[in-house]
Length: 311
Image (tube, rainbow, N blue to C red; front, side, top):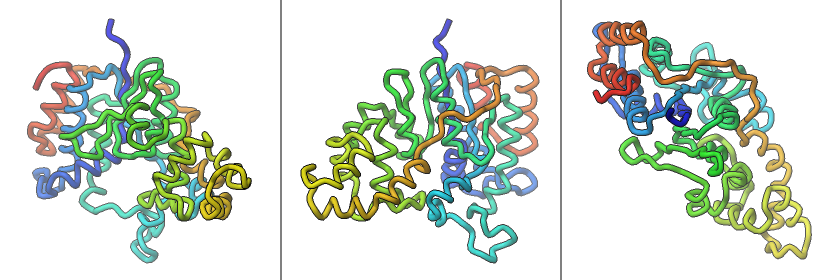
């Protein structure tokens, strides 16, 4: 009996990559762009074929900018907001219209193929991934381009990240050993590292004057954020005076931001059947969508991968 291996997809990150990787001149017979749908199906086919998960979950952003994270850090993802007056939803994320039209199609395709889609109210896909990875009984592959999810890596439990940051042709398997070699921190320290360093792509400014190398060096010596801030308050810690002053000035921000940076690992999620398998009805539903939307070989490839055959 094969060992259970769960694959968790950071779905939005993947369909954004698919959309930007293929021209939106790829359309359905009625002219609706379908490049993100086709690209995502090809990504899933590639991942399932290469890593052979026994279980697969498409994790969903029920809230891409949760209110509780914004309450902690008002700038959180603010740079992705539509400008006031842009339509009737100034709080919405800026998404190309050609992609917006495809998101319901993506959900329909995933449902047709029997791929479990899991989200949680007022939480991001990251939090769903964090919870499912924390409660999995076997090895886990987290597929994402988001460095924040490095914090869920756990070598002892076989939880690793399949990073798409360099593209689907150059996937990187990130483990705790890789993290230490690349950043000088462990997965357990990664949220504190990201809090100190900041992340402009998420609207997280970090502690002013504390860059990546400094953050890693501080955590290597003082273990965690509270250890670093405590050391900055003493003269005997060896932290240079200027650096200590910056840490003291940023302490309030850092303590407030850390819970926003950390992924949630204890959401009450629904029980779903995530088994990688296809029924005849699902195979037929996929074929129907392929004809209706002009999906070409993309649907054929994902159907073959989910069936455990080479297509």
